Image 1 (tube, rainbow, N blue to C red):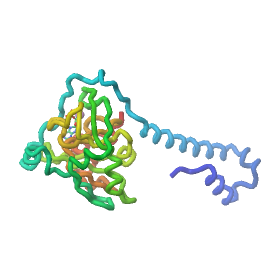
Image 2 (image 1 turned 45 degrees about the vertical axis):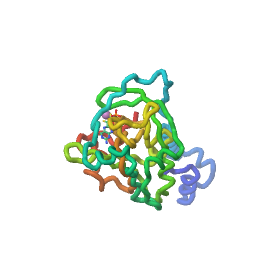
Image 3 (image 1 turned 30 degrees about the vertical axis):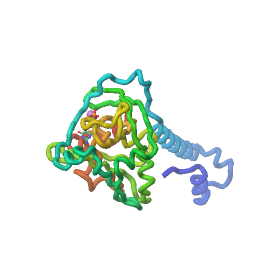
Image 4 (image 1 turned 90 degrees about the vertical axis):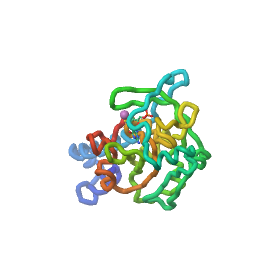
Length: 249
Ligand SMILES: Nc1nc2c(c(=O)[nH]1)N[C@H]1C(S)=C(S)[C@@H](COP(=O)(O)O)O[C@H]1N2
Ligand SMILES: [Mo]
């Protein structure tokens, strides 16, 4: 909770600690309390502003000639193969959990929504980077359509692939979910997404490391707690290899 200066003065006065302004001004311990409350406020303000800042965007001539794939490059399940076989015509993005209007959106519906294009650098924790151009619908617009309920705190991205038997998934809090560069990308480098890069839909969350950018997204689930998903740490790599849940860059 952010303690405002007014509330702090109010509660000190109510507690009989203050009798007048000179006492307020002259008390060193009060000045110390006041100072730390303002510091905390400034700190919270600054960290929020930092998290809302935009990731750098690049010019087309700075794009990497080759953008490698990493992790799963084809989920390979019969269900996924069937969807891919008809160019994802029957694929639907499920949006459920703590939303007022659970829905299933087709690729055509997602592509008809406002599109954001951004050229950004992808940084993988394994030590490689690549600059690519991404096209997609801002996640915020999809969440607004479904109507987040007031108890929603996180968005879980359920993916079509499994690694060593465990389903790949990731999650974001609402600061990142509503960030203007957080998009559900259906296109890359002026084309539709390839299977290797996560077709038909993958997350781009440009202020975080590569493993947060869930590919093969099948379902968005709004939740109030991450502990009930997977092994409870908010993502596949967080569960199996102790990767940080917040992978800010
Ligand atoms: N579903 C799914 N999403 C995933 C992965 C994965 O294995 N499965 N790998 C992650 C990692 S570690 C990286 S670096 C990027 C790689 O994206 P790319 O294949 O488009 O380069 O996808 C991320 N998203
Ligand atoms: Mo990665």
